[in-house]
Length: 355
Ligand SMILES: *Cc1c(COP(=O)(O)O)cnc(C)c1O
Image (cartoon, rainbow, N blue to C red; front, side, top):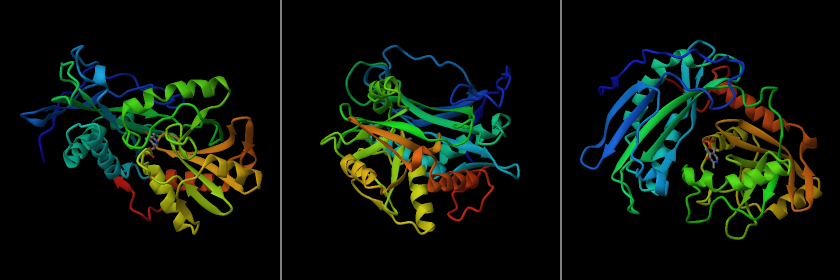
């Protein structure tokens, strides 16, 4: 056991109303911080009161965007324990993102120990209502004060916690999608496989246009031919066509979602064929015209499963599953959230009881 320095917050906040949490609006009383310097490596993991941090205006993250992040959730299970969902995958992906953005690797075990301690300190903040959880946001920023364009020599890793409510206050419900054929999110050889701020900054424009047109999310096409489907919003995407489930293969420009991996495993365990391959938007719309497009949904930690009810590409708009939540979307949502909350068996050993 390493020593984790802990400074208690002597002015704890009032907890928010568990029925109106929304997403990422409230933060707990403590946060985890750890620093990196060239001579000491990652050091000084601490749990301190949540609050503003002070950075030099020349800190490199402000200028060249060297940043990576993660997102996962802690749940109170039916029997009063606290669990995480496949946190090993998040820590592995954090290091894969670090590798791409030239940020030094983090010891996953030390970080996990710190995360467990942090969640333990703020355990009273884990909401108990249906479909609520505590969202964990680990992230790393380049803090070295320097305007040189190169990898920084100093970094700060932080973990902040946010109690979040149901993504769907009135139950799981389908979203409308706009196929974006001008702007792209990522290109082959770019940073699409890394969870890094720049990917989001470059996606906001298209998101705004989709909103103006009355759609809730953007469907991203590949950055080279603008032909093949990549992701939807900040989720991976699945289509059920003629009895087969198809999801874009991990080409390097697509984020390898933990929920994506879990959905593939569950669907296969239920006997549905799942294929990871290139899928063009033309093939998808043809399948819809032929009456073969049965279901579509996005996957991600925040919403878990987000059914797609309608999709617009150019002048053509299609309705999927009659604009309702499809059978398999609902099954997946119930299975994944049931495993997370300890209401269902966990045949793959995904639930990690931490406290
Ligand atoms: C985080 C993220 C996802 C979903 O990953 P999960 O591990 O399932 O939460 C999908 N696409 C993008 C671009 C993301 O950033």
